[in-house]
Amino acid sequence: MSQPVVLVGLMGSGKTSVGTRLAKALRRPFRDSDEDLQRRYGQSAAEQQREHGTEVLHDREAAVLRAALAAPPPPPVIAAAASTVDDPDARAALAAAYVVWLDAPPSVLARRITPAGGPDHRPHYHRDPEVMLTRQYEQRAGQLRAVADLRVDVAENDPDQSAAVVLAALTRAGRPR
Image 1 (tube, one colour):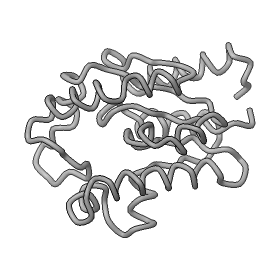
Image 2 (cartoon, rainbow, N blue to C red; image 1 turned 180 degrees about the vertical axis):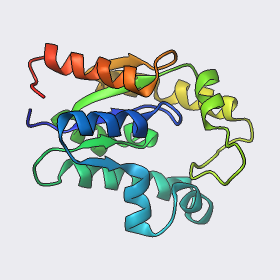
Image 3 (cartoon, helix red, strand yellow; image 1 turned 60 degrees about the vertical axis):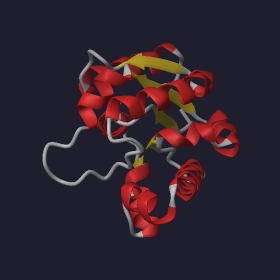
């Protein structure tokens, strides 16, 4: 398979956890939007959102996705920031990839992103994570659906199960591992 595999979804959907498993199984490099942002700009997504604002953060998230998609072979597995589907150029760039939407209800995702003590690298746009994620889901579900080649319900699946679903779909689609 010569295409990158891109995981999209809201915060807490398991893009990093599933992505690392896929990259290992496919023997490909793994690119994570959060790590790429930190490396490129020297700050976490949350720090960038606080210091530069949401619009700058989202522009940067789209830029690191486009850079990851343009990386030299072998094609990577990419965990993309949720906001990338808001950017028309990023959506257009996703046409060159096999896109997997990791989906779950906002109530499930909110439980996953609530930090258990330490600081969180994720930006928060509302003090109630479920309200924030419900708004994002309403805003982005149509775009996520439009770009996705595959939707995986991750509400009940752990990362290993979700990765297995994606690998089976890649095999069925004639995309060899």
